[in-house]
Length: 224
Image (cartoon, rainbow, N blue to C red; front, side, top):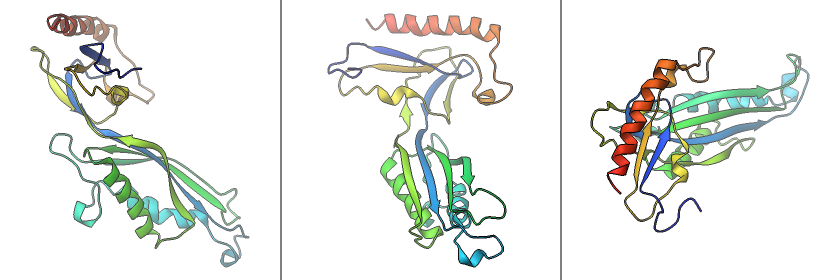
């Protein structure tokens, strides 16, 4: 219902912290979990078991560097507009105690894609895990989110600074197969303080954003 043909709208403004700049594009994203299975044993006799932590570590070490590895060596491609693709290992879990060979381990990752070929990126990630672990069948990739490619936005309203950002938004849910729909990404605040102890926005930024949104709405009204 969000994507009728033809579209029932001509302009969409997405609000995100852009420091009052118009965003010309943002990266795509992939969400995955790497899981490893092992066999529990007493830590004094580790050869009687199989460490899931030891099994997953080579995969994570490889994935952690995947945005810096040359494409011809299996790394993730970037783009001139958005720079390099990056990988973040955001959460790790494994084992039950220091004196037990861990029977399971997992890690949650987010990939910020600077290149539009999502399927190729997924394959490169799976190949990296396979190569790093020697094809260990007890280490696998689980895709939590199929992924979306980078998105281009309009930045044609005069008087704004123009930039690109490395985060992703929900804009990919709106797909317009036909029609000329303008998409703007704009808002007060800085992404550099997001998800941290100092996350905040000032009253001054909010007041300045009123003017920015007014100019975008006026530009949209002129298209009617």
